[in-house]
Image (cartoon, rainbow, N blue to C red):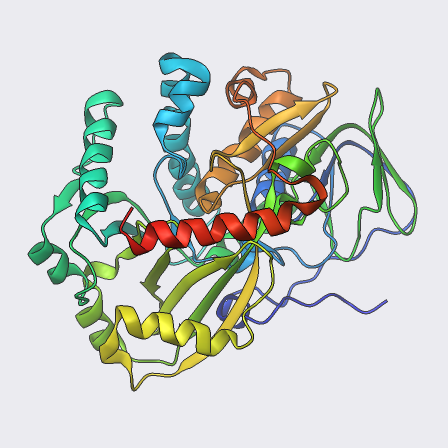
Amino acid sequence: MTEPQSPPSWYARTAVSGGISRPPLTGDASCDVCIIGGGLTGISAALNLAERGYDVVLIEQQRIGWGASGRNGGQICTAFSGGMEKIESAIGKADARRAWDMALEAKRILADRASRHGIECDLSWGYLYAALSRHQQRGLGEMRDQWVDDYGYDQPVALLSPEEMQEKVASTRYVGGLYDPEAGHLHVLDYLLGLARAAQAAGARLHEGTQALSITTGAQPGVRTASGTIRCQHLILATNGYLGRLEPRLRPYVMPVGSFVCTTEVIGQERLAGLIADNLAIAECNHILNYFRPTRDGRLMFGGGANYSAIDPPSLRFYLTRKLHKVFPQLADVKIDQAWSGLIGITASRIPHFGRLDGNVYYAQGFSGQGVALSGLAGLLMAEAVSGQAERLDVFGRIRHMPFPGGPLRTPALVLAMLYFRLLDLVGR
């Protein structure tokens, strides 16, 4: 069997411990908890469970970090991309406050894990939401007021004028923004690989190159692989946008979306600082947004666009170059060094879909672009639930999620929805 390889990306090329591989699982196995998926969610769950003394087997079809967790934009966000209003409407103000507190906890988990396990991942704080219209700027002001007045966010979040925004980001594209000092960015693959090392040190068994062909549920769940069957007491599905047809009950609620990222050639820290102040991460407020940040080796990482059909543009490098130059026309002389794509998982509401099936099958999916922090929370909540303390996971389980429309034809339906969102972005909504 050919050893699986990490997909080409700046992360894979620069990861501190990117060369470590784990053997595939051969034959049958038994454990307390089997986890399918070697991304941030699955590895976080494995670490939390192993620390609690559970016998854990994690299988990953490719390499640890092969999916979105190892090649996303590396941005750490506050709260939920769907907005707190939707959560309040779904579960009430009291439980919405609990969800908010857990979202803040997610960022603390990330920082604590990096510190405790000595993970060198270029963790940096400071984040800008960039408004492209007055309507979006008003929305940022309302979000700031909600965070501070309704939820007691004690960070000095600041609404920026066009002039103040220009001082932070050297682009004329933005009419204002919102600064959040407790969001930021990191080298996401280094962070994930550090968590994997910590999980193994705690006793978790991690296997790459091991595909889950099918699962069974019930009193004693099982996972069928090419070489045998894994028997367990609890099963965790941590596949997100790569769920496929593994669990038909979950598939309607998560949509794999193509996401595109690149890094420029080295332009140097001085020129980067002239583009982006204070090593900030930036994300636009559009529905189909651009996001970008500096890297440790003097490049600009830039992500932009999405494709609900999960098909790459004909020339990904050209596609991202055009988007980059619309934000920073002064980089017309700068070439794209690497460009890559992958699948993220979204929900219809953009609120993550956490919960359990049949009492002993747990899942977390649909992070909708905010999985860098929330995946760590998901891993902790599922570990708590396995341990018999499911109250916090059940807060999210009470959120009713709508299936994506269209059934077997949902991809064409979502392509039409994407066109609608592009029209909203064109008019600044």
